[in-house]
Image 1 (cartoon, rainbow, N blue to C red):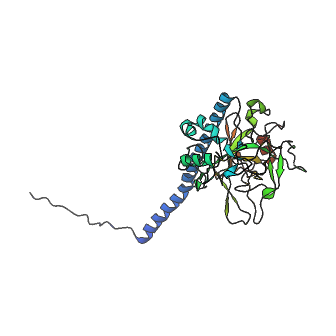
Image 2 (image 1 turned 90 degrees about the vertical axis):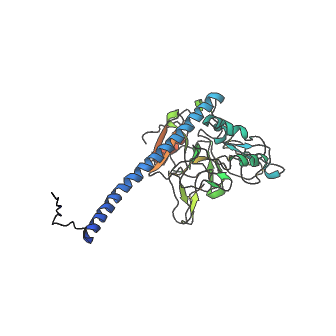
Length: 350
């Protein structure tokens, strides 16, 4: 018996052009609705990694304190070792990032580097004997905890690798109507619109502070924060690199002797501390067109703002090792109180 196949008399028809366009439009709308959620999830992951970086710094700082009975100096100078073959003055010592390396699982790298001699913290070409040695070792290295994943800063400029995190050397009093009390430990210099250097924070120039020096309480005082964002130049067009060590990298310290109010350039006339900041301006502060805040700058930036590319604020490490997110709307007075270890004023809500 033969088998007969029957074809359905109703033929399948394709999409019309209008239907196809409607489907494409719906898919486009769904993607547009989903994309912000995906971006928000990615930023949440990046911000979490940034938080973990600062927590790692917190562990490193506490382990350093347990070993040496003090926190590292925010920056130090190579005192009495002239720069670039000079006959007098000091060369650049390292920032606090350097002595923390053995406590951040970087002992092997730390042991290969030289910390005594000419410019151990300055790794640009021709910096000096120690700097040249250190540059050859670290130029192609990127430490995993040194950089916020949200930053848009370049990884390095020439030989110097940029970090995202700065030490807090204190807060500035502007005098006049500024309700923040004059710490009596700050020093003014006329460079870059008038810089203010303070030493009422926890990571200060050429001095190693102890936990007991944090008389306001370790949960009420910042010790580190972010400078991973950008700020506009005074012409309102270009983007200025913002971290305190942006123009010379995370290893750079200072050539200045002493501690505010007794910083001494020793004939160098080089008024720079890298990788630490005196809080003076709001979080994510950016100048308006043709205007610049005092103390801003990529190389002379003692008062560069705490900033980041995280939406709405920055991560900060408190001296007790905890990490908080500070909104850019935080009152400047509160921010200054959080930056000072001994102003004696309650922080309040933030």
